Amino acid sequence: MSFDFNEAGPQRSFDLIPDTIATLHLTIKPGHAGEAGWLRRSKDGGSEALDCEFTVVDGEFAKRKF
Image (cartoon, rainbow, N blue to C red; front, side, top):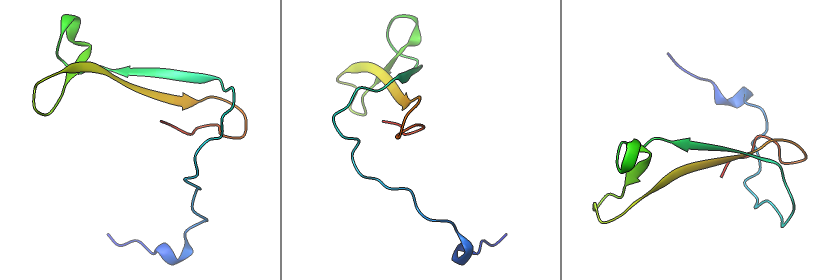
Protein backbone atom coordinates (compact mmCIF):
# COMPACT_ATOMS: atom_id res chain seq x y z
CA MET A 1 0.00 0.00 0.00
CA SER A 2 1.38 3.41 -0.90
CA PHE A 3 0.34 6.90 0.18
CA ASP A 4 0.54 10.10 -1.86
CA PHE A 5 1.15 12.90 0.64
CA ASN A 6 1.31 15.53 -2.13
CA GLU A 7 -2.48 15.82 -1.87
CA ALA A 8 -2.52 16.07 1.94
CA GLY A 9 -4.43 18.90 3.60
CA PRO A 10 -2.78 21.64 5.66
CA GLN A 11 -0.93 20.56 8.79
CA ARG A 12 -2.26 21.37 12.23
CA SER A 13 -0.39 23.93 14.27
CA PHE A 14 1.66 22.71 17.21
CA ASP A 15 1.77 26.11 18.91
CA LEU A 16 1.23 26.18 22.65
CA ILE A 17 -2.28 26.80 23.92
CA PRO A 18 -2.22 30.27 25.50
CA ASP A 19 -3.01 30.83 29.17
CA THR A 20 -6.80 30.49 29.14
CA ILE A 21 -9.72 28.76 30.84
CA ALA A 22 -10.81 25.64 28.96
CA THR A 23 -13.23 22.76 29.46
CA LEU A 24 -11.27 19.49 29.51
CA HIS A 25 -12.00 15.79 29.35
CA LEU A 26 -9.69 13.66 31.54
CA THR A 27 -8.82 10.10 30.54
CA ILE A 28 -6.85 7.95 32.98
CA LYS A 29 -5.16 5.06 31.20
CA PRO A 30 -4.69 1.97 33.38
CA GLY A 31 -1.05 1.05 33.84
CA HIS A 32 -1.46 -2.33 35.57
CA ALA A 33 0.59 -1.32 38.63
CA GLY A 34 -0.24 -0.10 42.11
CA GLU A 35 -3.53 -0.50 43.91
CA ALA A 36 -6.28 -1.67 41.53
CA GLY A 37 -3.91 -1.37 38.53
CA TRP A 38 -4.44 2.36 37.92
CA LEU A 39 -0.78 3.39 38.15
CA ARG A 40 1.92 3.11 35.49
CA ARG A 41 5.45 2.18 36.52
CA SER A 42 8.38 4.26 35.22
CA LYS A 43 10.91 2.65 32.87
CA ASP A 44 13.48 2.22 35.63
CA GLY A 45 10.79 0.94 38.04
CA GLY A 46 11.61 3.61 40.61
CA SER A 47 8.22 5.31 40.68
CA GLU A 48 4.54 4.90 39.88
CA ALA A 49 2.09 7.59 38.71
CA LEU A 50 -1.22 8.09 36.93
CA ASP A 51 -1.06 8.09 33.12
CA CYS A 52 -3.42 10.99 32.28
CA GLU A 53 -4.52 12.47 28.96
CA PHE A 54 -6.42 15.77 28.79
CA THR A 55 -8.51 16.73 25.75
CA VAL A 56 -9.91 20.24 25.19
CA VAL A 57 -13.67 19.84 24.71
CA ASP A 58 -14.77 23.11 23.12
CA GLY A 59 -13.63 26.47 21.84
CA GLU A 60 -10.81 27.44 19.52
CA PHE A 61 -8.55 24.61 20.70
CA ALA A 62 -11.13 21.79 20.68
CA LYS A 63 -9.73 18.27 20.24
CA ARG A 64 -6.19 19.32 21.27
CA LYS A 65 -4.62 16.84 23.68
CA PHE A 66 -1.93 17.11 26.30
